[in-house]
Length: 164
Ligand code: FES
Ligand code: FES
Image (cartoon, rainbow, N blue to C red; front, side, top):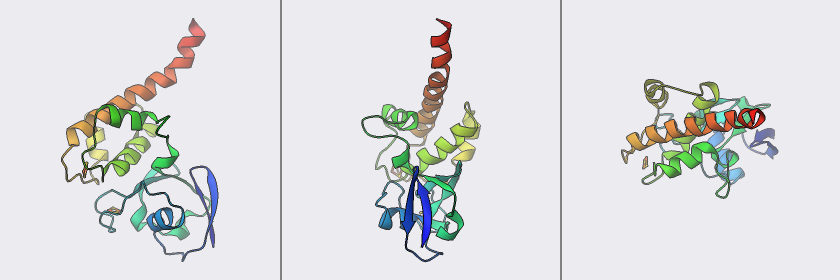
C-alpha cells in the first residue's frame, strides 16, 4: 500500500512497488488521459508531471512516488474551464487522432512552468521524446506558442488591473 498524491488528492493504492505509474493512474484511479503507447519509454504518450518535471509514467515505478506530487491532464483544467495549454491546443486544432496529445500537453506544461517564453528551438528540443504518428507537429508548435502567450497574459492581468 502506498499513498500517492495525484492532482492534489491523496490516494491509498494497493499495488506492487514496481507497478508502473501509468497502470496505477489508468487502472486504479480511472485517470485515463495518459495513454499507453509503447510501454517502453519511447513515445511520450504516457507523460505526466511529477514535482514539476515531465515524466514517462510507463517506466516510472510506484515506489519512487511516495511523497511526490503527480499531475495528470485531468488536473490542469476541465472541459468547461480549460487550462491555457488545453485552450491553446483546442484553438489550434492541434490533435488529429489525439493519442499523443495528452503527453505533448503535459511536457509543454512542464516546460512553460519553468520557461514562460521558450523559443521554437527550445520547444522542439523539449518535445524530442514525443512521437506523433499523425504529423500535426506544426500545429502542436503553434499551440504551445499560443499557450505561452495566454499564460503570460494571465500573469500580467492582475498588475494591469492594479495600474488602472
Ligand atoms: S507509453 Fe510511455 S513512453 Fe510510450
Ligand atoms: S495526433 Fe495522432 S498521434 Fe499525434
